[in-house]
Image (cartoon, rainbow, N blue to C red; front, side, top):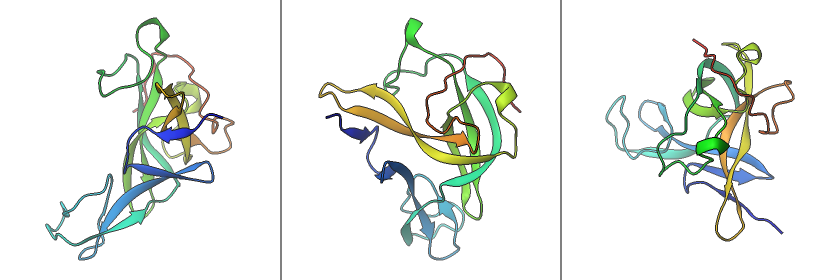
Amino acid sequence: MTTTVAVADGIFTIHDDRPVLLGSRCVNCGNHMFPRQSGCPKCMHDDQEDVELATRGTLWTWTVQAFPPKAPPYLGPVGDDFEPYGVGYVELDGQLRVESRLTVSDPDRLDIGMEMELVLVPLTTDEDGNQVVTYGFAPIGDGASTGGDTATTNGAGS
């Protein structure tokens, strides 16, 4: 049986096969941060509490990652195996904007302001046979929430 493991510790957790982003909130001013931080960049207060961030939000802006990121730290496919993917900022209402991989990269399927949901995105298989996953956002009701669409395009959003 394959075990699913997060690409990095402390960024997100998996509850019932669904990701939850791990952030922090300043107890002084209420500012949210992701990933977690020990000090608030807004008010400089150093008392933070850990919070689970919202799993739904709206697409604030996006583009297409058309070439492999630097490896390491990137663990996904490179060379001829690389497929472009969407990258965007998703605004979590009342919290913050999160930079994230998107499950689609087709410009005809992405609109600024569209509703998005947090999903697991398969990244690679480690040396122990575990499926390494990262988090991403998928359009709600688009059929793309499986994390499986990697349509290729060189288009970009705003």
